[in-house]
Length: 232
Ligand code: SAH
Image (cartoon, rainbow, N blue to C red; front, top):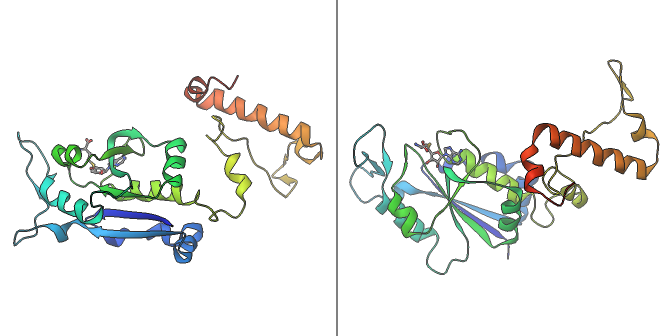
C-alpha cells in the first residue's frame, strides 16, 4: 500500500506545486505516494460558505471555525483512519528528521493547513491534531509548511531516491551536520579541492569527513551535540 497524504486547505491549487516535479513528482506519477488536496470551504454550510469568524475575546484577525474544519477532517479521515492528523502550526513541536522518518514509515498523513490567526482550539482537541512547526518564524499559511514536511517525507519512501546510501550520511542522520562537498574542477578561482579527498585513501577520507562534521556541528549547532550524547 502506498503512502497516502490528504491536505486540508483553503488553497488546494497550491498542491502538488513543488511536489509535482523532480523526485517527488516522479514518485507521485509512479504511484509511490498519493496526494489529495481537500478544499475546506466545501464543508461550510451557510450561504456565504464562511470558514472563519472573529476571535472570541476580541483582537485582530480571524479564526478558522471548529465546526467547518471538523466536517472536512471527518470526511477525509473518518474514525479508524490509521494516519496521524497533523496541524501545521508555529506553536507545534519543531519538525525533525526523526519525526520525518517515523512518518515515512507509516501509512500516510492527514495535514491541516491553518490560515488567518489560527484555528479554534476545540477542533484541535476534539480531533487530536498534532501541531507541527517548520521553524521559529511565521508563515502566512500552513500550505508552504505542509509542502516542506511532505518533501522531507516523500524522499525517504522506498524507491524515491536513486542513491539510497546518500540518505544515511546526510546532516542530522547521525546527529551531526554534514561535511563539505567538492567536485571538479580541481581548481576554482585559485581554490583547490582539499588534498586528502583526491588521495584515494578511503580511511583518511572518512576520518577527514568525520572531523569536518564535528567541527561544523560544534561551530554552528552546539545544541545538536548536546542532544546526541553518543557523539563525542
Ligand atoms: N497567529 C499565529 C500565526 C498564524 S499564521 C501565531 O502567532 O502563532 C497562519 C497559519 O500559518 C497557521 O495557522 C499555521 O497553519 C501556518 N504557519 C505559520 N507559521 C508556521 C510555522 N512556522 N510552522 C508551521 N505552520 C505555520
